[in-house]
Length: 268
Figure 1 (cartoon, helix red, strand yellow):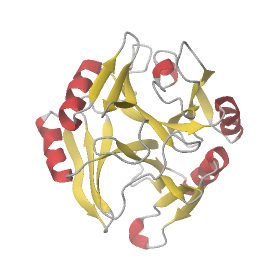
Figure 2 (spheres, rainbow, N blue to C red):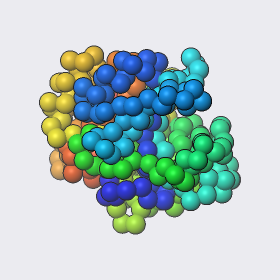
Figure 3 (cartoon, rainbow, N blue to C red):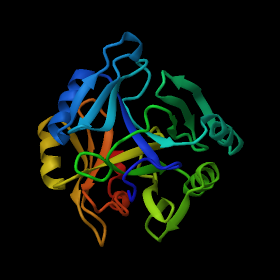
Figure 4 (cartoon, helix red, strand yellow):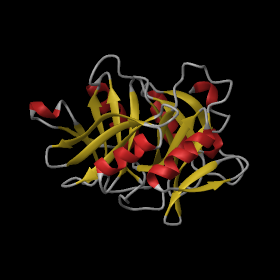
C-alpha cells in the first residue's frame, strides 16, 4: 500500500470477527507483536483494539452471532457513508447494515458487492482508522477473491472510483497513482461453497519466520511462503479459529497477492 494514512476510497481498517476473543488475542500477539486492549464498557461488545507500540493497527471482536463466519473484514474510508451506501445500491450491491453512528467515532456501513463479497465503509469522525501501514505487523495490502472479476471491477470502480492496473496474471486496484490491493478469480478448484471475500495482507519482516511462528501457534498454511517472478514473498494462513489472512515482506506491497492467484486457491 502506497499510503501511510487512511485515504478516502482506500482501505482504512481491518477487523477480525472471531469465535474465541482471548485465543485470538494471544495468537496475533505472538505472530505480529500486537498489544491488545478490550473496551470495558458493555455497549462496546468486547471490541478490542490492537496496537504496534502506540499506533492502532487493527481490531479483534467477538462474532455478533454464531452464524457469522470467523473472518477478517476490510473497511474502506468514505467521506459520506450515506452517499456511498446509495452508490452501492445503484451499482447493484446490497447494504446489509447501516449507515449507523458508532458512538462519536464515525459512521459505519456493511455491504455486499454484486458477487456477494462483504466489505465495510467508514466515515471518520473521532476515529480515522489504522495509524500505520506497510510496516511489520500492520496492514499493507487487500485482495478480493471473487467468481466474476469483470463484474467486480465494474462495481468497485463505480462505487469508489478506483483505477485498475491489469496484467495477464493479476488485476490491481489503485488510487492517486498508487496501488493498494488486487483481485483474483476463485477458480474451478475452489469449492462452490467458498464465498467471495476480501482478504487482508499484513506486512512482516520475515515471511518464513512469521509463517513458522503462526503454525507453531496453531495456524494452518493455505499457501506456504513463496516467491514467484518479480512479486514479493508471501504466505497465506488460517488462524486457529479459521480466519484467513496473508503476510508479505514489508515494503514490497505492490502485487502482494499476485502469487496467490491459482497457487493458493485450493486452500481458500
